[in-house]
Length: 397
Image (cartoon, rainbow, N blue to C red; front, side, top):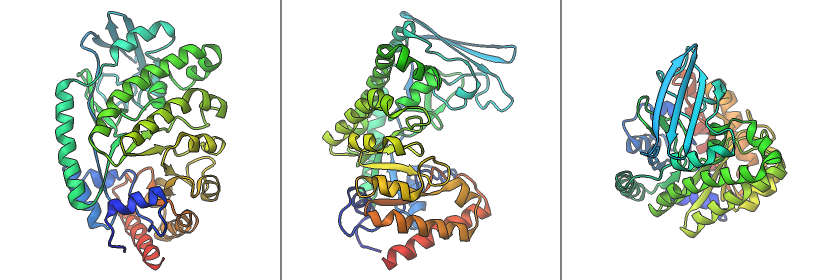
């Protein structure tokens, strides 16, 4: 392998520098992360496997305004949460299923809530004033802790020649507390996903036609809240910030609606990152074919999550033809279908195909998409086969 640092290999692949080798950096790797005490051990163990580890910032906690009085109750198989603010109240109700993981509390920024939702917190223009109050900026204490964490992680990243990244890092809801901490929900770099958690997957699309001014204002509230947090990640000197866009594809938004309601804010965030000297990653794993030119127009540097197995319109040939050489591509193999459930032969074949089709674009980072979660003998055997095949093809290139 080249003697360039992992950070340089990653940046070279994102930028498309001539002769850049194909790095291998797992997008999410919960099977390994669960075995590690902290981000530093996680990075070290990835490096031991030969991967291009990145050092990721934990997000700032999400805290709701101290002006909001939050109450919760349950009854008749339902959970309820109310946020009473000086500007009005927001309420959320969902089905209380046997597999509910949050005791009797409701996190509103969460994929567990959405499929069980009976009432979403935001249902119309009258809810905007309360939402503006509820979405509080980070506290001074949160900012101080975040800056200390960022300094330590940047130092570690530079000492080990690793990419230093910020933005999207999921959150964990803490039942009984009016805040979110690190774990499984949304945070910085989450705009349209947050919209869907607050309103559902149907109403915003209807509002785009029936109440476009309200939808535009609502998205603007979320974007403004997100950018306050994004600015702190950029201030920390990250090499790359990411925005999660799982709900920004054409399974939901037509190209016309994407241009009108998503592209302006996305392009503004990309410019914000570039002004700070950072690259911008866009995490979208499906529904990209019809909006390829719009994604490229945004100026994002790398599309994260190219999934040929579970995505729609994301076969490697389609992605290569639409995006190849025009922006970085990160992914290439389905984590659940190939690495977790497939055979060694399936894994080696998938890596070879990704390297052949996307590696040739000159702007490619290999990884299983989105995640390797299974802690099984088969999954770990395939992880080793994945890495061995990548190393063999990289060294032979």
